[in-house]
Each structure stands twice: as C-alpha cells, then as structure tokens.
Image (cartoon, rainbow, N blue to C red):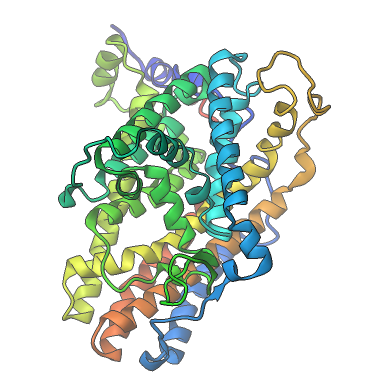
Length: 494
C-alpha cells in the first residue's frame, strides 16, 4: 500500500469527528484575547511572584509560629447552621439527590439521544462534576451529605438490617480501587465519546452504581466510600481546602465547623502511596485536558502522522480497526500522570536529600497534599468559564429534560448568553487563580517542612526544590491556558 504522509494524517485523525460529541461544550474559552503585554511578561511575573513568596515565608515563618491546632467555630451550634444541619434539611437534600439520580437514568435511557437536548449529560458532566468540585473546594464537602449511593444503601440497611456478612477491608489495598475508577472516569471524559451519548452515559452510571453498592455491601458503607468510591475521595480532597468541614477539636468532633481555609490540607502523618497517586492523577488529568486544546497537541499529532518510522505501525493498527486518535490520547493520558509522578518524586528526593532525617516515602506522603490547591486553581481556571456558559443549558433542560418538546417551567426556549463571561475575564481569572493556588501551595509546603524537618535550616533548604517545582508548574499552567483553542477535527496540513 502506497501510504504517504497525508494519508497517514488522515487515518490518524479520521476518528476525531466522532470524539467531538460535544461540539458546543469545549472546556476552555475559545475566543481570542489580545494581551496588553507580551505573554512572557505574564509568565515571568507569575513565576517571580511564586519565587518571591518563598523568600518572604523563609524570612517570616518561624517554627514557633506554626500551630498544629487552629480555632474552629461550631456552625452547627448557631441558629442558621443548626437548621441547615438538621435531619429535616439533610433528609430533604438526600431525597432530592436520589430523585435526581434516578431522573438522570430515566432521561438517559428514554430521552432524545442528543447530548445538548437531554438532561443527563449536562447534569453529570457540568452541574455535578464541575459544579460540585467547585462547591467542595470553596464551601465544603456537600457530596458527603447528598451522595445518593450512601442514601440508597442506608435505606437498604434499614429495610434488611444487618443481614450482610461484611469482610475486613484489606489494608494493603488502600484507595487503589478509587484510583483505578477515577482513571477510567478520566478516560471516559477525555478520550472516549461514550459519555456523550445519554443512553450510554446512563449505562455507565448503572455500572458504577453497581460497583459502589457491591463494595459497600462487601466491606461496609463508610469503609468503601472512604477507600473505593472515587468521587467521595476526590470531593473530600478538594473540601480539605474549604473553610468548612468536620470538627477536629475535642469540643467539636463530628460537628460542622468554620475553620481557616486551606489548613485542612495539613497532615500530621504521611498519606498512603495510593492516596498520593490519587492526588497526582487529579492534577495530571486536568492539566492534560487543557493541553489537548493547544496547538502543541495538534503539532504532536502532525509529527506522529508524518513520521516515516511510525508509518508502518499506523497502517497496521488502522487496518485492524484501531481508532488511532483515541489510542494516542489514551497513551497521553497514561504519560501525563506518569510524568507528573516521576517529576514529583524526583523533587521529593532532592527535598529529602536537602533536609535529611526524613525518609523519601515520608517526604512524598507529607507534601503531596500541598499540590491540591494547584489542582483546585487549575480546575477554576480551566473549567469555570465552561461551567458558566455551558451550564446554562440546564435552564432550558429543566423544562424539557427528555427533549420531547415540553416547556414545563417556561424556560425551554432559553438560549445560552455567551456574553456572560469575556475572554479578558477568563484570562485574568486564570492568572489570578493559578498564581494564588501556587502561592497557597508554597505556604502549605513551607509549613509542612517546618513541622517535618528537625531544624529551621533543614526546612529552608528542603523547600528550594519545591519552590523550583512550583515556579515551573506555574509557568506551564499559564502557558497552556494562554494557548489558542484548537479543534483537531481535520487533517493536519490540509
């Protein structure tokens, strides 16, 4: 077969149109914004701000000023807080959550099979995943209250009592089940077009629900939620950043409290390797999502399509029915978390060598949670405009959730207001959130170092590699977000 570069490019990208199931739902804001200053000035200024924060903290933060305890205000004890935390309100929220859960299944299975005319895709991908992640980070762990699987299983426990013979959860398993499930979720979101079909999305929800309920039945409700339910772990990680959470002091254990934001990410003991992997995969996948929309990704596809060495392999794979575009995106999805983990471990090794007296594994486990503010910052920068624009679809869908032409609440004709956010707003939001997220991460890392390493000098020197890592990732994040959005839906060079 005479297989030239253009044919290779066509085969490589022939499946892209199928993967673009949400043509109006691009994750980034595609409108161009002409910066009032060169990009390198923004990147350099942001990196300098992060580096300067390290110097300021090194000069001002002392060991005796790093408190392990912090003040908490018991929201549950207030009139408004007590009402919000009451069994009536919580029960109503849980009932609403379960109703929405089954409504998603109903619309997915029986509604019109268009992702923008069916309630299920908008509710799952935009309102639930993006919206609830933002709420978790900025307000608190609402998912713990409204998790429909917890509510359904608790109802089953009331009906059937303690008839289930539950096993002890293997300690060695950690949260690896959640890591695997979240990796599959990321693949469905970023690579496969399966989640764009309402009916296929409903099938996926049923499959995940079956796994979750089976895990709770096998090991216990709370045990499985804390180890195997990917979204309970993801939202709870984000919620550690939030200003509200469960009380830690003796007087407030189990209550809903107001606390200093971000300090929930400080830990007195290193987290497990599996939770470390979970944090890194969250950070890596959201960054990979942004990279997929850049000209650099399109150039990567062009290089692969035109490389003479890879050409025979591309032909063979294409002839066996392999979707080359999905395959390459899948390999990238594997490579990004692996690369992030490798880079983080390398810098942790440098930190351990500079600080001494603390093992490499402990350094990794202590400092990985300091990366969570960066994941939250990128989530805000990359997804907030998408949430504000595409999230408006829910306004019309509540009147016509099945796509049958209904107008239950008079909102079916609502059109998305694209003027709600501007490219200028998105850019400056990105700069502020990315820089602020990294500044908070530097602060948490420095506090952790002061707590972990035996001397002030060891703590200071250990943070030089972390500062380099933070500056580098600040520049990388802003560079990705500054790139014009491209759609790889055609043949490179055509």
